[in-house]
Image 1 (cartoon, rainbow, N blue to C red):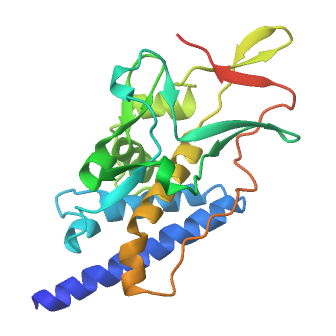
Image 2 (cartoon, helix red, strand yellow):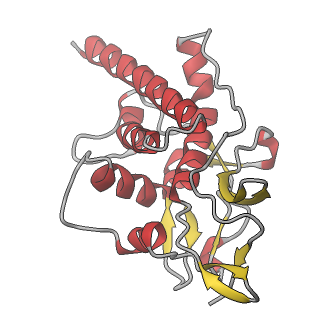
Length: 232
């Protein structure tokens, strides 16, 4: 019976990884809503609620995952996030995931530290971890565990320019309601798929995680606008 349960958990984990990978690919091709599927799959794989998570069921919570964080976020005095970049192009200003291919530039973290690591400090010095962001998106926006409780920090980040992004236009700074959460979630998914690839290849040797540059982010603003963090 134990062996059958472990086999079921392994198959479920493989299927969720495939769902996550497909959602990333479709999101990169311009299907905005796929970020919700990314969040729900990550929640299923990583979140230890009352019934545990799939990584725990397959005994892989000790696995190492790469982190894109380059700074000590707990010591920062200003808004910051290393999980996206701001690009200026013909289509305007866009917020995109970093999608590094050189893992040597990323810091290895044991899963429990990776999941709980602070990756966002907002303009009010409040902080969010990967787990906070994944659960906020999956639970209420994705409908995985809908409740009346709202993560206020995440809500400000997603809806009210919680990072304090401003743009120079017509000689003055203006606040833009750009939400970076889709790009941040895509970057979290990128890290996860890199970290789980060794395990996945041991079960499905033909599996590979291929990254292509996203064709969109859905977060463009007017061309010619300069965007940057403005300290609070």
